[in-house]
Length: 125
Image 1 (cartoon, rainbow, N blue to C red):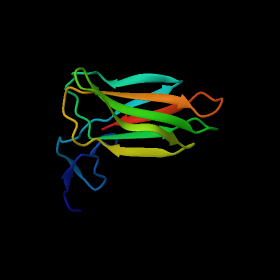
Image 2 (cartoon, rainbow, N blue to C red; image 1 turned 180 degrees about the vertical axis):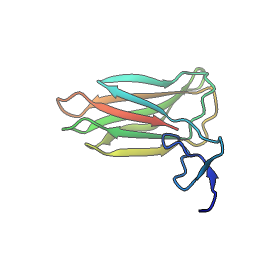
Image 3 (cartoon, rainbow, N blue to C red; image 1 turned 135 degrees about the horizontal axis):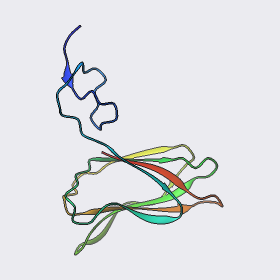
Image 4 (cartoon, rainbow, N blue to C red; image 1 turned 90 degrees about the vertical axis):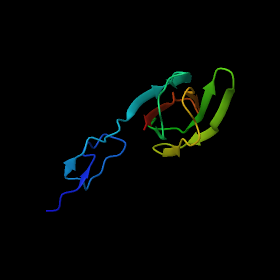
């Protein structure tokens, strides 16, 4: 069997299923379960967090929900990545975060599309 170095942690952002030896390069993922009509801070403004991708999954069993996803910096204001995006039942939306430097805050706002409370799983990588 050939030796292949890489990240062997299947919960990491850069997991390599072909790797046979872990090389210490694993990048941890951050997971949130967000329920309710609310605005949730995912990353604090002026933090030095680095995010390259975000995954949103609608886990509410009977209805779609509406999602706003935006970055914010104290003096620059808000920049919407998604605004009024409808996330169907069971659907996963992935988005690469490109061109956003450190110091920003990342926020998500959920709005119900029907009578059910929205519920979304969020993974940041």
